[in-house]
Image (cartoon, rainbow, N blue to C red; front, side, top):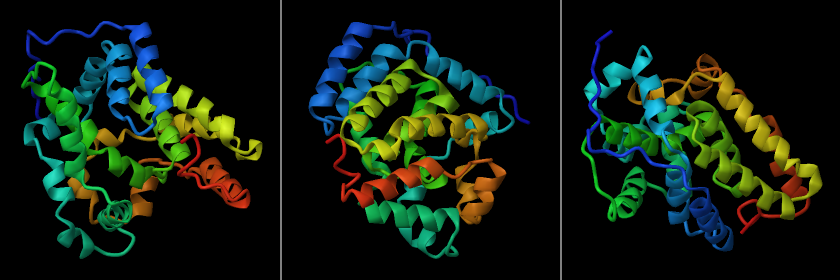
Length: 256
């Protein structure tokens, strides 16, 4: 295994936790869930050293140093839909491109959104920035691999999954508060609190997606990759979607 010493810019500050600031931005997010800029503010206000700790864990893994050394820019590969569509049905890449086209998403779309959020911050060109970008660029792949959708409850459960894999008080807080909002509108039978708990359990039990060579997974069968990474089925989440359907509730609109 290649040993790479990561570079973190000496001027990069360690964010201090600011609970009151996080609460103010959470109120704005509750008022308008489409105002996704508030998510970045909440995470920034609460995560503290967690991103550095997570990066250190990545660098101690078997694959982390080699992935850092290669520095593959995933959006260029993931947005090239032609080759992905030619992959076998049921492969990771084929499932990914079908998901992205169904949802009207692009990997570069997340890049542009994050760049807008960073516009008012000092940018430190270091390996921690590369790792943060990798977390961003694999977000939709997490949806595909875990089976959690982009409806409110699916995003919430995926936040729980992500927190178990990466930590971060900000992510956990958003997941908790989001779940509370969903529970106010969802049928009790949907058991949305248990859905979030399931997401947390599944994330803890699975191998870390961030440490996988995403490009090498693209032509592999999705079911086999899930089994190898110990990604368990989101049973309670799927059951909750059935409950929403029974009550004729659109899961996209719950907690809107």
